[in-house]
Image 1: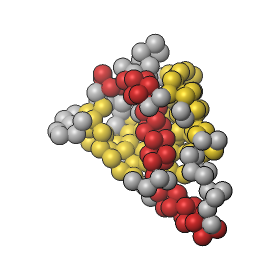
Image 2: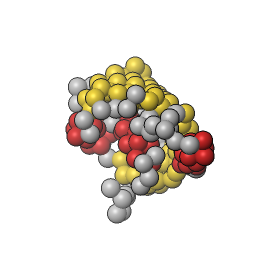
Image 3: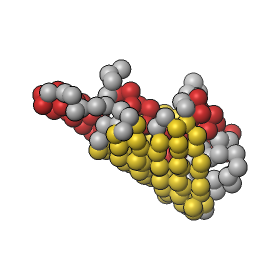
Image 4: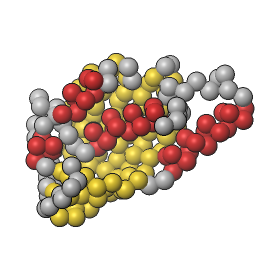
Length: 177
């Protein structure tokens, strides 16, 4: 993985946890009316800035190459299959994973209805960040969502927006975890 891809991957990991509506144990259960089982999620990421990458000591050509890599990584839609279970939907395993990454996060649910879940996650530690997630259940088998995040690492700020759509594929997840 390139040095540029590492901070992007770490940031996307944290954002994806917020985006999949996994909430801390101290917050209420998401009320979104979505079926459990196998989902296909398509996401597109837009990124401004490169947290953790110091481009000030790079030549103009290296800076241009780094910017091009960031643009390439962010421009392609990503399609994944994910198995959503009631345990994953309710239990906040995200905090334990983030704590292992040197971060402490607090999540606040602002809207929690069968059609809409809006929440904010603020993290402190190695990669301070604030993420706002909005997930809308279009039906029990389809959702759209947006996560916007601002993070700071090594004195650099990054702004990331992830737009997602999800479609339910079936109750049986097969080999997908």
